[in-house]
Amino acid sequence: MCRTVDLHQAVLAKNDENALALRGYLGDRGTVAVNLLSSPGSGKTALLEHLLARAVAGGTPAAAVTADLATENDATRLARSGAPVRQILTDGLCHLEAGMLQRRLEGWLPEGTRLLFVENVGNLVCPASYDLGETLRIALASVTEGEDKPVKYPTAFGLAHLVVVTKTDIADAVGFDREAFLGGVRQVNPGVPVLETSARTGQGVDALLAHVLRCAAGEEAHVPVLARQHERYLHSHGNGHEHPRADVHPHPGARQAGAGPGGEQERARGQER
Image 1: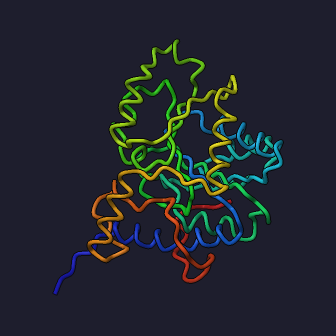
Image 2: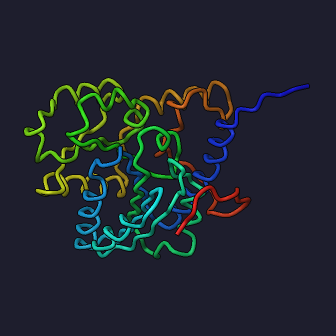
């Protein structure tokens, strides 16, 4: 008898197992992971550099892992903040997976790290479907990318706990339609908080760090509608490994208990450094 196997769903199921273990590992260490998703060129590296520097200056132990297909340019740049930083080179893979991040953290993540920022590969498609064991998922878009970004990429923005607009210092110059953008956000993720930032002027950077710290202190994050839909699906079907659609991936910030990293390791899918 022939049996059809959906390899994509199998990969997601394995990733969920790794994310569960990683979430437990980070929770045991008191570390809150923040997953940053955006298109290439959105300005997330510049913004993250400021966030790390302000966290360090304020006495909050913070670290970062940044992922790219090639080069360690972003890690070099982020290290200027004074925070510990590590690079993952995915060697062509368009997203990070929980197992890749887990292996990179083992033996490196400094004791006492409170905030772990994960700068995902610049891509709003594939990374949206992969849980990295994060507590907070942030989707970013710059004012230069167009007001319809949220509705064009409903999974990335629909599963975010927070949406951040970047490069607002040039919003008027590029004719950014703020209301149209916010309308798109409300369409795919009703009620999600939106913060406007500029790495160049510093606008919104303190507010963003404060939001992250409040979540780290236990303030309940926004729960996206897509996450609630998926949880209802799992409850009705009784199978924690089913993914009926890519845009109803499990809520990345769900409180789940799990063991630390370990157990069976799948073949590494990226070159980690």
